[in-house]
Structure formats: structure tokens, C-alpha cells
Amino acid sequence: QVQLVETGGGLVQPGGSLRLSCAASGFTFSSYAMSWYRQAPGKERELVATIASTGGTTNYADSVKGRFTISRVNAKNTVYLQMNSLKPDDTAVYYCNALRRELFTTRNYWGQGTQVTVSS
Image (cartoon, rainbow, N blue to C red; front, side):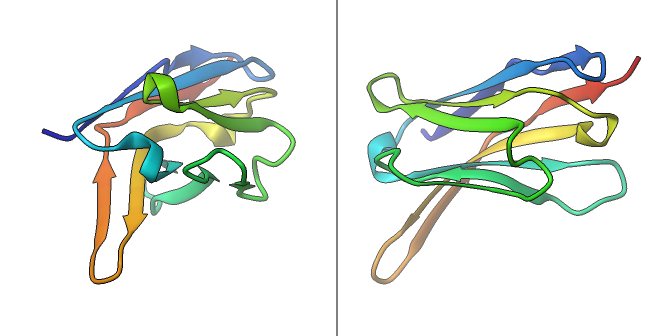
């Protein structure tokens, strides 16, 4: 069955760094665009970063540009989110997403999330 398992969350001080990982299984990872979303308490889930299936194209939310980097290793079925210069506003549950748009359907998978807390 399809699984997306996020790891790497935790508590970090402002200005610190974390690296999130998302290990995928149960589908053809290299055929899917991968994204990281986040959801803070009382707020809607928002898109943080996306990387194309081949890794050639990336996009970021304005709020994280220059601080976060998304990458993937298709041979390991894993996508990463390197987060630097973290701010308290980055506190949220971070979710991994896999998306593939086909002619007549869209395949969309989610992980269970990992908590990131930025606090002194």
C-alpha cells in the first residue's frame, strides 16, 4: 500500500536548522511531483515547496524562499526539506505530498505529518 513517512521534525531555536525527510513506498516515486505543505494551529494548510518528478524544477512559497530547499533522490524514494534560519512563524505540522495528474484522474497521497516547533 502507499506510504509516505515523514521524519526529522522537532524543537529548534530561532535561527536554527532542521532537515525533514519523507520516505515513499507503494507507488512509482519517480513519476510523481513531490511537495511539502504545513499547517499551523488555527490556520489552513499551505504549500511550502514543490519539486518536479525529475527534480529539475522547484517552487517555493514566498515566506520560505532563500531559507528552505527541497530536494529528492529518486533512487532512494525520498524527498527532503532543508530548513535554515527558522522563525517562530515556521512552527507547524509539516506534511509530505505526492501528486500525479493523469489524463482522466489525479493521484494524490499524503503523509501523516511531522511537528516542527521553533521556539526559544
